[in-house]
Amino acid sequence: MFGAKKAELEYSVLDCKNNLSLLNVDLFTGRSHQIRVQLKNIGNSIVGDAKYGNKQNAIKCNLALWAYQINFIHPTTKTSMVFKVAPNCDIFPWNEFLMDKFI
Image 1: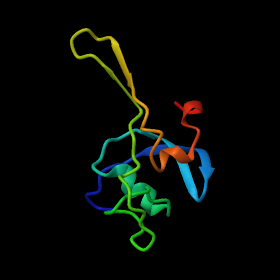
Image 2: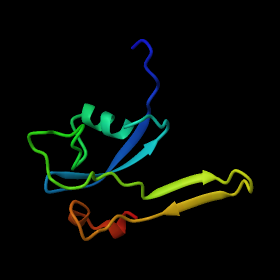
Image 3: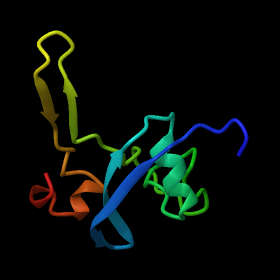
Image 4: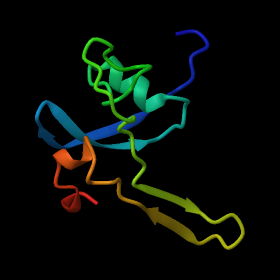
């Protein structure tokens, strides 16, 4: 496609329950809405996605997209920085999965 920018990611399915899939997504590029657009294009929209989700079967909840780990090199010390935060596992859709075994 003329003028299109490269948008690349890789995903794996961690678990499936009640017609939901828990995915691990690794980004190789950082385009705006990249995960949301690419998952919609393969027919696996994110739960709670009002913009890119399935409007007919929309579930009323927050967008179920969570960055549980972020890594980067500190700009001055050049040390590797890793930050991890789990989603609130008491609310939908996170409560559908045994999150402790994935995080």
